[in-house]
Image 1 (cartoon, rainbow, N blue to C red):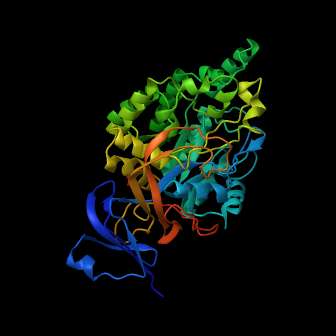
Image 2 (image 1 turned 135 degrees about the vertical axis):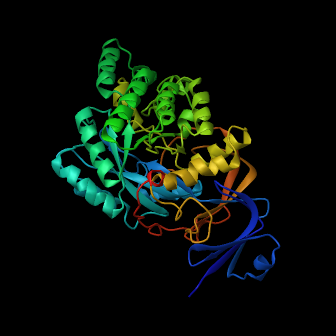
Image 3 (image 1 turned 90 degrees about the vertical axis):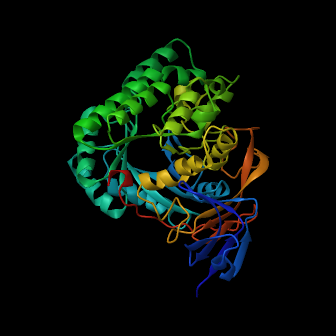
Length: 467
């Protein structure tokens, strides 16, 4: 039986347009848009009508970089696929792309099947997977082709974390050559991990053990150098490149120079680099451990370069790299040795609100907000136009957003399964009111009405910027 929902009276904001329009949803998809008060809109009837007067009607957010239940440093990220996707929905995100992990000595298939099992039947919103390559060899290179056909069309490699995820330049080149052949997109954690490990060892030998030294040893120049090297390897391989969690001005400059040459090189940054800094890492006592992530937080002056990169499209996407660890019982594994602090921050619930604050502050436009948080990640990772826009035929992943209400971010009120907020006490303007996932209310007037298992796995096509 057909079910219809009508959203009336709102300002529809997509990456391309802003229009005062009513939105008709039928059987989980956008059926039509029509101007307020038009004859077409007046004729529409529906079982459910949502009043969006004085609200924005926006596409559900697409967070293309999350780590639910990621094993790291002897523990695991504290959000499960159930708790993490519920928190994402509260923050107006309706699709995540998480990372399945291949362990050294194991096949890609084994890693992917493990992540399928973790997520299956537990997600409140739709999800896809990237594949982390930890062990590039003839067998796993062949598996890459099969994964692209299965809808896992992006592969992450690490220049950091020797002994865990690290790949040397030869392995990176071989994976890039394969992706140039099969249409997959290589995602790169660009930090010179070999050099960083030397600096970590030297810092600890000097007795520099506090969290702030995490940022001091992971130097800006080692992010910029690795970004440069990744770009040159991609040029040699003839493959596209997507650099994750860009945090430093010098790394943005490397991306901008490559893009000025017309190369298929893309960059992502995250809210923590736009709103937090080394000041947080240096908080007294062990408080700085809350802000340990990699790439690390940078001195505040780097923020302006990141915002500029987002405005000029030298950075295209804002994802969260959501990888939460509780302060008590997880982050404190690194007391007395910053190198043992699990790397990661919670943020999947805060991204859309923080970026709306950037709209309020005049840093980006409304359409650019939707572009970097919804449309471009969907295009980048083969989800568009099913996700990332409000247009006939698209999934009815729709957020009713109140741009006027003020809220204070806090661990007391967030829904992520972690005992602190990276943005504790920060007041922002704008808040999610109602969220539809494929036409079904997941958040209704600030109440969770969704369920584990509503979210389904979405196979992805290849990056649309390369077609």
